[in-house]
Image (cartoon, rainbow, N blue to C red; front, top):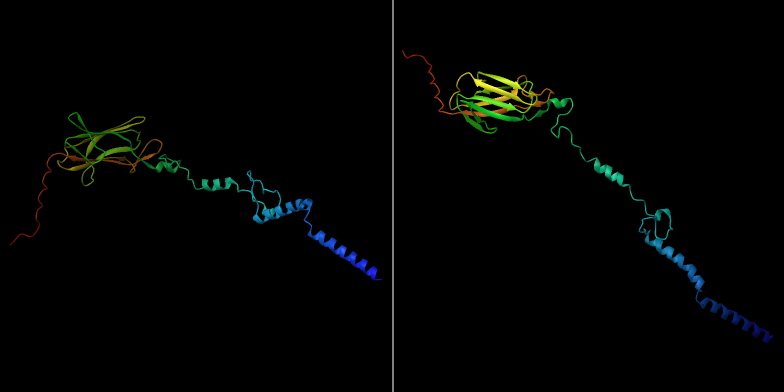
Length: 238
């Protein structure tokens, strides 16, 4: 009996030693190779998706739909938003008349010639400032457009129209005015030549386009005559 117990004890010790040896043994190469993909996948998921150079998904080609990079937004949406801020120029911005209401737009009257005529000699009239002229001068003005309802008139310091005679000549693309005052102008006095519309303030061409008035300031030479003395009113003394 004692011998049998010893044999059983030795077998149990051998079994225990074999079990301990298997637990302490290093993992095999096949086990390590099988564990490598799992650890790599876990590490990739913890860092988030990695984009390839072409921008197609993550580097490992795996992972859930939430880990994949969302597609870039369409560039047309940004382009359309920027285009909506651009204002295209209209005909009115370019100085051209628009259809219908454009006939009321006021354009700059193209003045080509303005002269005072004294004894057959022509003296240019400045567009800006006052031009000195002889009291016996006549006037000629040419416009580089056909004005169907234009006119030229001479106004004094009170803006009253000075009695004058004149002529108007009209060509396909020009208008010429000539004005002769009925008498000599007052020396040392300011006057103004007005080129405007005969019916409205603006003159119009045959197509209906409106042109703003032109005002040319004049100052006659010589000494301004003294104003007549005013008579004193009152009752005579007894």
